[in-house]
Each structure stands twice: as structure tokens, then as C-alpha cells.
Image 1 (cartoon, rainbow, N blue to C red):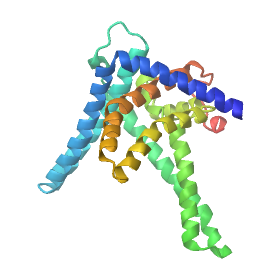
Image 2 (cartoon, one colour):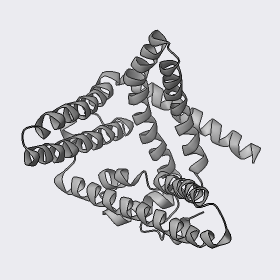
Image 3 (spheres, rainbow, N blue to C red):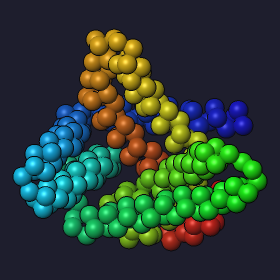
Image 4 (tube, rainbow, N blue to C red):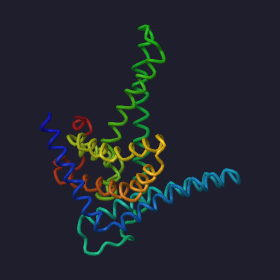
Length: 261
């Protein structure tokens, strides 16, 4: 187990190192797309608050529009990074904009994943319900059921997190993209957790100093997260996907049950 953790750590360090080199060469392009995501997210919140006081229908329409713009920009970011990783001679931003079909597949996959996650929550809740008759405190049982369902859903989301990449990189349909992501992450969960931990540390430090009353330190960490961590994390995820695909030996249409563990 220790040897496996060492190998995973070395693999993660290599991914982060290669991602840093790529970001350093194309920082302004990648950071510019990340800044577009930031503007889209914040602008949508401001306009939603404003239009909620004017017209409810217009507020819903603007929210729908900004959801499409935000996730469209996110897919554009990853598609652009893939083009940089593949060392294409001429990388144009317009070539990275997802098609209408890719956006539809993306949202269909998102809805499917949300429904499956809800199903997991309901299954755990129903399985825990008979414990009421075992004289177990009801609030305790509810909290335990929530924790268990939260862990199950987190692992599930981690396993299917790469489904958008199969849509924009392999033109896979939503259900097949989800199955491919499940198969791709088999045996790579530890590496993905290490990557998450690497980026979570900086966010946790920001929260700690922010609530501890160190405004200068928290502001510096906020700038670091916005202008360095966000672009780097996007590149790291894309590079990790490419690395896992290079070692992927599963089929083009894998079965979920064969790739659970």
C-alpha cells in the first residue's frame, strides 16, 4: 500500500510539473478563459438579483442563458487545453468552441448524473430506515445516512467527472461518456484524490486566514487562487485525463459493473 501511494504521488507530481510547464507557456490564453468564467459567474449572479425585482420570466431566461454561457466557456477552456497538449501548430480559440450537439450531450450527461446521485441518496436512506426499529436515535441515524450517502455520491462524482472530456474529445454520447469515465478512473482514484488534496490545501488556507482575521494573507491567497490555482487546476485535470487515456486498456463501450472496483 505504501509503495502504491509512493507511485501515485510521483505520478501526480509529474502531472503537476508538466501542467505547470504548459501553463507557463500559454498563461494568458488559459488565464483569460478562466477570467471569462469568473466574469460569467459573477455577472449572472448580479443580473439574476436585478431581474428578480423586475420580471420573474426574464430572470429565469437570463439564468438559463448564463448557465449555457458558463458551461460553454468551461468546455471551450478544456477543449483549448487539449489542443495545446496535442501540440497543434496553430491553436485558435474559435476552433475550441463546443458545438450545439456537444452542449446538448453535456447537459444530458449532467442531468443523468444528478438523477443517479439522487438515486444513491434515496437507496441509502431507505436502507437506513429499518434501523429506527433497532432503538437507534433517529437524528443520529439520519446524520449517519447522510454521511454515508455523501461519501458514496462523492466517489461516484469523482469516477464520472471526466465524462465531458469524452464528449468534446471523442464525440461520445452522454451515457457512453459516463461509462467511459467510470472505466477510465478505475485504479486511478488515489491519484485523483491526491490532485484534489493538492488544490484543496490552498483553498483551506484561504478560508483559515480569512476567518482568523488576517486580511492581507487571505487577500494574497485569494489572488493566488484566482490567477494561478484556477488556471493550473484546469490544465492539471486535462493533462491527467490525457495520461490516463494513454494507459487506458478498456473497451470503447465498457460495462459499468466490470469497472466498479
